[in-house]
Image 1 (cartoon, rainbow, N blue to C red):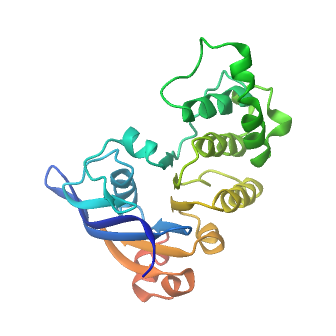
Image 2: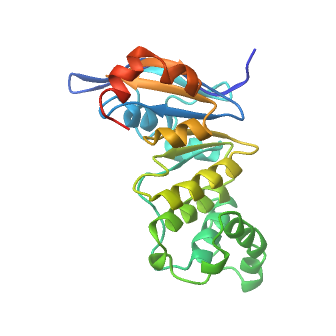
Length: 250
């Protein structure tokens, strides 16, 4: 039997009489990179928000490592190892790259950011902070303000702060959205490296990224699962071609 780290059974989400997600069941295998794709309005973001506990399902269950987290809050599931990175880069613009990552490393310690602690305590976090900055290729930008980073490098910084929380399951919302070709390639390489030893679930529109990165793909349309499998399988599915590729959503 496959080892699934994140599972959803018969998820439903209604908004004032409109059913945005209907009976979606999902099983994300431990150690895999799994993508949710589909045309605009397919229910991807709603599904993603339910899985990360930013929305409560109208019905259905969500399990993390076999534990029912359906009614847990987002901060609680983050402490359990399920951490989300947002589509819009979320960094502290006026802090340096180093300070952004160090804050995330401090957050991993627990509820305290240690602002009142001695410099020696903060210095003890420097090694891990530098390691994460190097992992996303931002060594040359460590002492500069995050506000001066190009868009793609801001996304790399956000990935570093997400990794600082040491997630078991990392959920990425449109990680390459708005990027040029060079930045896309850099982020794909970073995600591939970050996925070693953990599980990644991502919403992504770029089919080239999905085909290069993902072990399994779930295609949504009109709030329901249309197809599931590896890229070779789903890309040849006539329903997917009609609803996703044929619909002009690349």
